[in-house]
Amino acid sequence: MSTKPKILVTHKLPETVQDYLNLHADCTFWNEEGSMPRSVILEKVSDAEGILGGTIDEELLSFAPRLRVASTSSVGYNHFDLDAMRAHGVIGTHTPYVLDSTVADLVLALMLSAGRRIAELDAYVKQGKWQKGTSGTELFGVDVHHSTLGIIGMGRIGEAIAQRAVFGFDMNLLYHSRSPKKEIDERFNARFCELDELLRESDYIVVMTPLTPETKHLIGEEQFNLMKSSAIFINASRGATVDEQALIKALQQGKIRGAGLDVFDIEPTPVDNPLLHMPNVVTLPHIGSATARTRNDMAELAAKNLVEALNGGRAYVVQELKDLVPN
View 1 (spheres, rainbow, N blue to C red):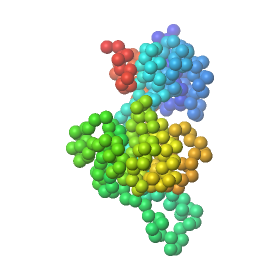
View 2: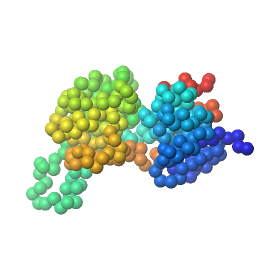
View 3: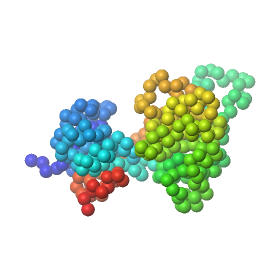
View 4: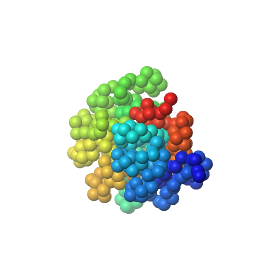
């Protein structure tokens, strides 16, 4: 009889990661495309001590009396019901650090694409609209270099964005976070400021905050009204940090120049979302960490977190649940 802990994996993993988990646990894997259906998860989680993937809420926990650890292969964990997990004594782990540079690369791509109208003008050329005499001001974008960047949320990814922006594009840096960070001020010649000031002064505004009750709809109509009419708005955090209807209204009314979005209120976003039909908005399908190397690294760390947490080792436990870890 196996003494290994039983774990349930709700999405397909690289073969090397499955091999690692098989060495340390009695595993039930999902090897189909997409994620394990919720009904199947509830059926199979009854004897699991660990789970990798899926939404962890009161319903699932009521089906999983033996569950001790839930692991996610993402840095964000807004799909964890922390109160319910605490009530059931379930530790949660996540994967910080490994995706920081990849997400920062994407944010710079969104800034460049929205500012220089890359997607819009790519379609312009492919549709045969590029003719002699049509290369004047109607094709102008706005510079990224030497512009002012405002980052809302100066965590690890925010710092990686700042490094690229300041040292790669000579941008002036403003940031807003819970408190000033002396090392950020000194390294990037940056300035901490209140949110309203950042919104008024920035040419590019990047939201990189986690989704919490305090940050839900952090950016709404009032905040868009403070922005420059020439501002480019970038969101690569979570869709719900922004009031999407207020964003649509701001774009329709010309209160801001454009936007670059990797996240939406509803994902996948409905095809009738007005944002998908605005040429000055770059829309991506939540691909911040989507490179083969980074996703493999995230899967490896999520698996290691699960094994370590089940065996009393070192794991990246979410901050709010660290007190559940035995001393």
